[in-house]
Length: 335
Image (cartoon, rainbow, N blue to C red; front, side):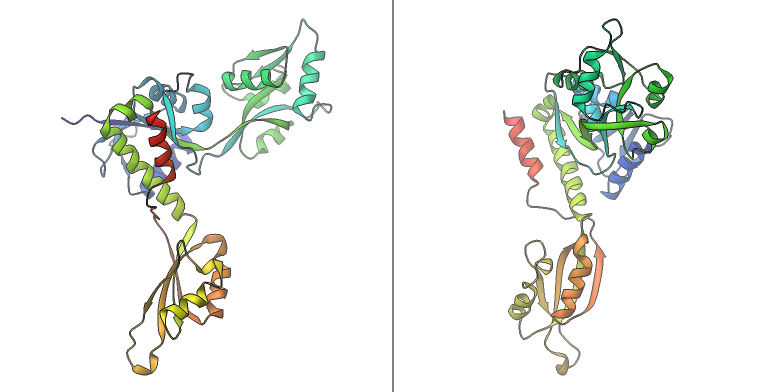
């Protein structure tokens, strides 16, 4: 019997919803018989076994080899990946779950607006009562604070409602994830210049030993990576089809190549239109990919070169010859 490849996904919250949506958009819908079960499957890839876990546990289980692959926020990977380099980040930017890990202080600290200011404040605190910092990212916080000479301080572990700690008096400042900043404003807190530990979003990672020693795990990894890359690339583009009048395909190409927005990924595809009557000769159908931010400009330029009947379609996948991240993964495994 073929051994199943285990893929761990977030078990709840917005991160789970966005992960399942990504997989479904990539034609890899996750099927779960019972929402209370922690195991599921992907019908299109029967060799994969899905396990729903908490993000921190996903990282630990991939690190320990209990599961082969995982998707979680990079903040969790940075905190729990360990020092043995058993985790390889395969795709670091799945384009959801965006946040940043920040040093956060009370607004009433008017003299603390930078990481250097915080260093001065910790150094001038009474020796018998060093400043207290609360947060669940102890590894990342310790490394960052020590690097910036924030000393002495006392680290307090806390999981929930960190924003309340400075105003309650249970901590002097915190290290926590920030998305919009609205929660900080509501609790009279602020970030400081130079106080960002890392930027995070959802990422795809795997166990080094599994990727090196299980060919079936590496094959699944390539398939998932190709789908993710092709989908994320397609999200940035529209497929544009139009008719353009010209004397030849070459003359139409010359018209289009005057405008960078009309050159497509490698160049436009041009083919003759076969009209119903001879007097309609001289039309060519063009097809090209246009970046979403350039769509209106591209339509105006098509009109200037005589384009008509412009059709704009969403792109589902844009596959490259070989994704750059796949090449980098192979290089990493070869070391």
